[in-house]
Every structure is written in structure tokens, then in C-alpha cells.
Length: 145
Image (cartoon, rainbow, N blue to C red; front, top):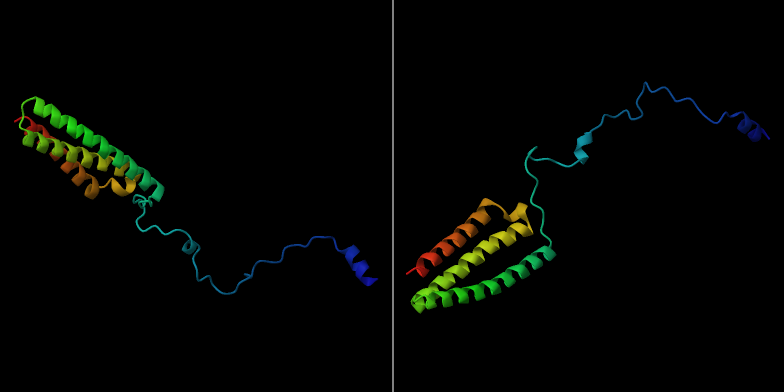
């Protein structure tokens, strides 16, 4: 009977306790920023993201299709040069240089489309573009003889 009596006199809420003393008497050893992400260089560009295998497979397929197309373009260019009375060996060399130039340029473009933050860098793109342009220029000069 006494338990019922105290339950009826309880107002249902309590005043907050005095907070002059902290709940945890020990100091915090872990700062609040320790569990967040770490920035090595604030303001630096974001890290290169991983490329999924699906993107690489699609890019490889597109590149192979382009190589087949470039092979037919090479044959047409060689035939065009032979019709213009260029020696067949010289025309063949110019055709292969055209093929190599187009292949390297398209490799740079496909890699840039697959993952620009990873492959569109000075060390990857510049050599591909340089060899591609050198091949195209050499094909045009050799084909003029």
C-alpha cells in the first residue's frame, strides 16, 4: 500500500542536478578531431579515385574498335598514296606511322575519359600525345615523297 502512495505523490519529473562537478573526473585524452578524416595537405586536390573494372573494360573495348577502324584508315591511306605514284614501301611506312599516331592519340583520349584525375597527368598524357603527333607529322612528310 505504501508503494502506491509514493507513486501518486511523484510529480513525474525531476529538476536537473547541479552541474558544478563534471560527470567524468578524468580529463579527455582523445581530442574530438581524432575520429574525423585526416587532411594531409589542406587545400590540396583530391586523391585520384579508383577506376572500376567496368570502366576499364568499356574503355578497352572502345580502344580496340578504334584500332580496327584505324587499320582500315591505314589501308585506305596507303592505297591513296600508291595511286598518287608514291613507292609502295614508302606508302606502307607512311601508313603505319599514321596508324601509330592515331593509336597513341586515341589512347590518351580514352585514358582521359576513363579516369581523368588518375590518367590525365603530365607523365601519362604528354608522352602519348607527343608520340602520336610525331607519328602523324612523320606520316604526312613521308607520304609527300
